[in-house]
Length: 369
Figure 1 (cartoon, rainbow, N blue to C red):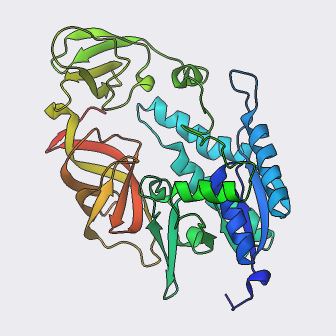
Figure 2: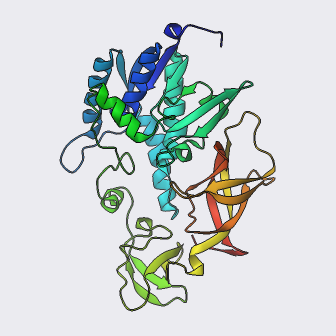
Figure 3: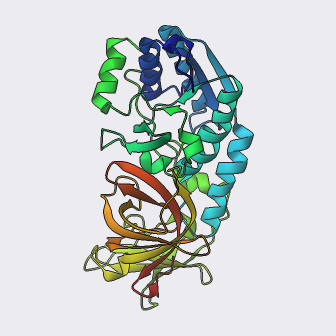
């Protein structure tokens, strides 16, 4: 891209009605960019109080854009979201897996459908309120962890490609959350004290099991220990994930019980006793849907650290890309590695990419998940 004055660089910010994207838009405007805000509507459903949270978020986004003094628009991606994200979410649960829809939303909606839309409007850059950073050097864009390690969101951005991040800005990636709140308050932004959204975007604060039951039929079955003894009843395998302790309804003496597997054919939930039970741990996995952020791609074999779920500490790992495009990762023994989640690769501060976990092993023994 030829060198332009900032006032001639058009940046479209994905304004969500939250404090992070609000401050992202404010910072870019103060830096002198030509900034516009666009609100994405991806889901349309009322919560248990009859409130459509998308409408509330849109009103907050409008207030902030007016305060900052930037034009704003709204775009509806409900169909794309249902087809590319929500359908995937349901399909994964049908298979007994635990998907991460936020990763798919970033890959398919925010940095694909929305990025394409922004480019069609003539944007030089798309900006969001994610806690991540980009480093542009020698014609390549690297994605780095956000400086606030507690808020770093590269895990959720790990399926993006070089084409998807080369024209992206993350204005709050160099800040911690307290600084973001402080900037919002100092500038009297309408979202300064707004609570962060939690959980899966289309479920929000609602009861997860109840929400899921509207879309997938729940089938009652036995909870069994690793020897096949019946310990109780479950009311749908989809409601449980590997490593789960609460909500099993198993009492008795001794240590707590944890989910360590699922048998889809028998519709059985497998549990083991004790948080350090060997059955909860693995040291190898097979993954698919390999994504490389680097323009140069990934080496066939390399050492790195991995995260197998958000907020997990880094695990020393060795990654090998197999001839069929799948990925084998061996790693220091780790608890509750779960099919459907992402295995994200890091080289220090740099996020290299990720794959989706398919099969989990303890040595040569495949875990029933």
